[in-house]
Length: 239
Length: 243
Image 1 (cartoon, chains in turn orange, red):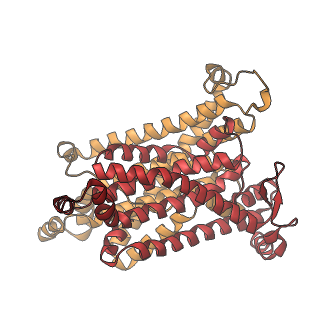
Image 2 (tube, each protein chain N blue to C red):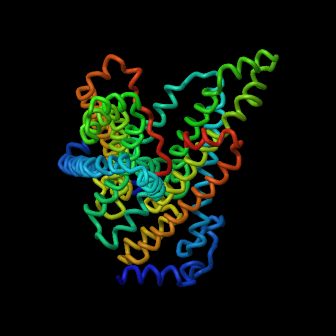
């Protein structure tokens, strides 16, 4: 496809010239993308942990919570933004709500799986030592569930970075905005640069979580094979 | 709540279903064209694009997964493929393809969707084949079955539940990805939302969101039944865990 430049005009995929010319704009969108991701993850964690613990404490709630998260996860992000936009307007709020919703689903599921996977003997032993339910949860069950929670956190963070770009549909897609504009004007360098930055951001955040998890779980370093986190099985789609 | 009223009005207007110029037309090059103002035509286009993408992905991923799973190698590769595909924004691939030699429109969307449909099928086929009990394999070889017979008559039937789960995940995900086509001048149900946002008809946006959500949930429910049907009763519990 020749595009708007016509025959023979150079339209490279990667160019330093683009960065030199529009560095500020790229930086600005990268900042939006990063803060949006971090904000969504912080909100999702703050909501997911209590919700998962609630589901753990009362088994009657765990069925509905897991069922609802599964069904919601099947609704595509594009549709979710469209469902929210008429009520929350176009812009940051809509995107943020959508991102929190998807991250929430992954986190609740993984936290619950982690809590349910704690060795019953360990729980029994703690109970025998006279631990109160709260202390049991905070000092025994939660640390034991950490590998699974971290696995969920990694999946949720990486998919949130990718999901932000769908925000384009309501005019607030971070780096996706640059991709979209680059496509409209057939500016290859703009598309490729923002796509690479998206991948890099996901990689950096993922690495940060891994390092943070290693620091938080000193016991996991020596016996990594034993505590390898169960891979989250997430059904459905967040395109 | 006039938005909900507008959405209802849009959904109950027969014209929005069959379109003002019929459901199908002819494109400039004489090929079939789905009219972009008809819900029925857009749904058909949506399904056509989704199944084309899943078909392409399955044609490559199934044989590859069967082979890798049978020789029990390449588990690391399949994990890497699925991780990278999670980090790659769909929009990035769509815009990259649109600006490349592939060009705008449905072709770019089908190729991009096929790439995203690929990892779940590959991973599940591989896991299904590689996780077959080693004793069962051993016994089959001991009876004098050839490699091909072991792969197709012993391992494959035991892997069917997981393969079906992979195809289901992949299809649901693809039906959910295709709406993005509207952003790169493609078709499918996303067009309703995109047009709605562009013309500030939020009732139509809402209706589009509902239509896509219903389609995705419906397809997933349908495939869940199909998955259950192809899974032999004794294996059903295992399949539920793996889904």
